[in-house]
Amino acid sequence: MKPIKHRIHDLYTHRKSLSTKSFNARGKNVSRCKLCLQNIKWCICEHRRQLASNASFLLLMYDDEVLKPSNTGRLIADLFPETYPFLWSRVEVEQKLLDLIQNPEYQPVLIFPDEYAESEIVFSESSSLEFSGKKTLFILLDGTWREAIKMFRKSEYLRGIPMLSFSPEFVSEYVIRKGQRDFQLGTAEVAAMALECFGEKPNAEALKQWSNVFKESALLGRNKRPISTLTPFSEYIEQFEIAHEKAIMAKLD
Image 1 (cartoon, rainbow, N blue to C red):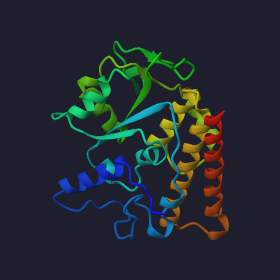
Image 2: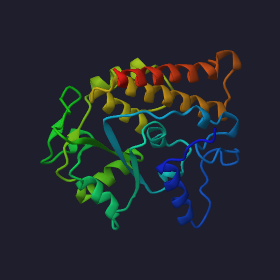
Image 3: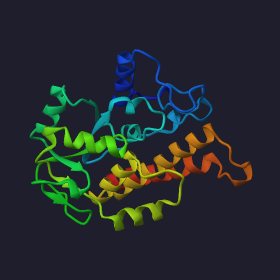
Image 4: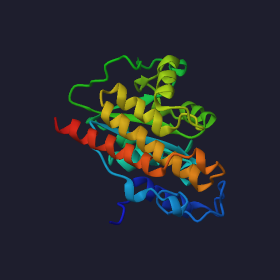
């Protein structure tokens, strides 16, 4: 079955069309899948499965972030169709972006550290994120930490939006629970924490397991580890499929 393209795939194509020269990420000589951007030998496209959620996601992506094979924002769109990616610009803001944030059917919630809050309403992971009659729209700033701060400070349309912030204790417990890996907390993992706070733990677990599949695929694509130390890739796929099935069943209950 041919994998279904989603909005981040379209944004990737659009961003490439704007480039005047080739984007050279680490491993530029690797033959990559055009959708998941992983080594073609370890392509994960055939394994991705969509899920239903009561939340939606808006990704503000910094410049060439969408071109990076290491980007995890695309993993959110892999599972959740209502993921809306936009290229961030300090001077030109897409009207579709503003329309989405101002849509009366959505309640936007910005995920960012509360130390940057000004007059915003701030929620913690222990807060109730229920908004009567509105669908939650989680806004994530997709880039390096320095780039995310720049996007936050230079985007006036983000002012006044309620903010969800995670305590260091919650993040620490999350990292321990998902296991020790050679990666920092990425955009997809932050989205998983938001889903967990939102009461969708099965969806959060599915996204975490999908992140593990992605990370292992990336590691295998440039693998220098002893074969004897590797967990079979099929086990990562199996764990995702189990989590995905549980998320579907939870939605049917």
